[in-house]
Amino acid sequence: MIRLVINETKKTGKVEPEIYGHFSEHLGRCIYEGLYVGEDSDIPNVNGMRSDVVEALKEIEVPVLRWPGGCFADEYHWKDGIGEKTERKKMINTHWGGVTEDNSFGTHEYMELCRQLGCKTYVNGNVGSGTVQEMSEWVEYMTFEGVSPMANLRKENGSEKAWKVDFFGVGNENWGCGGNMTPEYYGNLYRRYQTYVRQYDEKKPICKVACGPNVDDYHWTEQVLKTCFDHAPEHLHGFMDMISLHYYDLPDGWEPKVSATEFDEEMYYKTLHQAWRMEELITRHSAIIDQYDPEKKIGLAVDEWGTWFAVEPGTNPGFLYQQNTMRDALVAGITLNIFNKHCDRVKMACIAQMVNVLQSVILTEGEKMLRTPTYHVFHMFRYHQGGELVESSLSTEEKIGEGACEVPCITESVTQKDGILTVTLNNLSLCETKTLQLQFAEEGYEVTEAGILAGADVHDFNTFEEPDKVVEKKYEDYEKTDGNRFVLTLPAASVVMIRFHKIS
Ligand code: AHR
Image 1 (cartoon, rainbow, N blue to C red):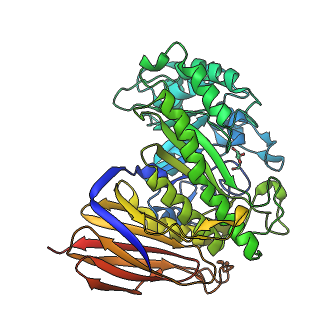
Image 2 (cartoon, rainbow, N blue to C red):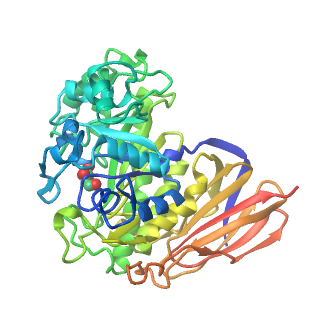
Image 3 (cartoon, protein in one colour):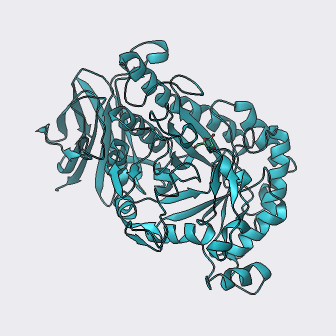
């Protein structure tokens, strides 16, 4: 029997709530229809934000929302998205389907959405095609409370009070769609642009995020940091608070052809293997960051992650709309457990994307809405937000498959918050139930609550006709065997959350 040894007396760091963050881009039906329908829509809304989606998102306690892109960010000119809606400039969304962007969702609408969700704001600036002045003025517009040209403009547009920008991204994927730059060139631009991301209110500091690598581009990480930390500008307050990492689970490479719902055993394990690769990527990028920041002040922000399959048949290829099965749920479970375990360096992560794009937690079709299996994982794992990571390890390193299909049999993480221990587990085996002995250091624990996500078939997914085919259920397949031990039965391809409190 596999043993999970938990030493609840040893805490190794805080799991920042922002690890459970989301990403929303002007792409396909993420913003328009998915989140924003406009005040005049027949779909029930509050100030244009669709109420069913906002309510569902509140249940997973979204901690932060990144916007407006993605590739879109480096082509976005924020002044096009303010003022009277009918007069806002229209533009072509060149990256995503060449559709017309009418800019009816802009800065004010984004801030309103975050207000309704009760989440932190993460605005991504334009380095690729924008000027330093444009970026600087956006920050002034959003955050300056006093009298200034941009603050006055904001007030004229109906927002008397400045907002709080919690995180600000200085460019997106500047190695690719954000300008095809070399790391040295971007590093220098980062130094320059970030200078003018002014901290107007020291009580509301803006956390600055530098554009980090794509997948395993260790050279990018090294060179950006080298360029940025040459002549040691780190004495400047808030020079670089985070560096990003983008990693998508593309089991058949870029331009994916594999279906989100139809896959064989090999493709199942390949997808999970790709998800598990996040462990190596974080470890190796962190080792580079350690050289420049041994005190771990700079966070790694994995601000784009998730599965990327072929679009649903019959949908616009530029909209990246895909279904979401139990396989996606396992990818989410694997990834979130990895983030928890690396909370010393990973301070934020944003799944791509929130609604109707790639590995979404919610899908919509007109007035209909459904929660995907990935949504339920975020719901089960929400207890980790803000918890202390607890030392835990498995007694086995048993793997399934080989090479490009190899994955650990089980993955886990444990946190403690408000006296309650939350354990999350994934059984990645496609057909074998696993029995696990969970052992605490101390005695006296009882189960507080437990949930499980498992489809009758790993291909199961939710549809608008059957939105609750894959849902979180009460988990009862456990037994207390003595003072500090429990035995858990984990069905094949399942995600389990079990929480414990101490009675003595
Ligand atoms: O999430 C879709 C796209 O993937 C983003 O716009 C870009 O940053 C990444 O390549």
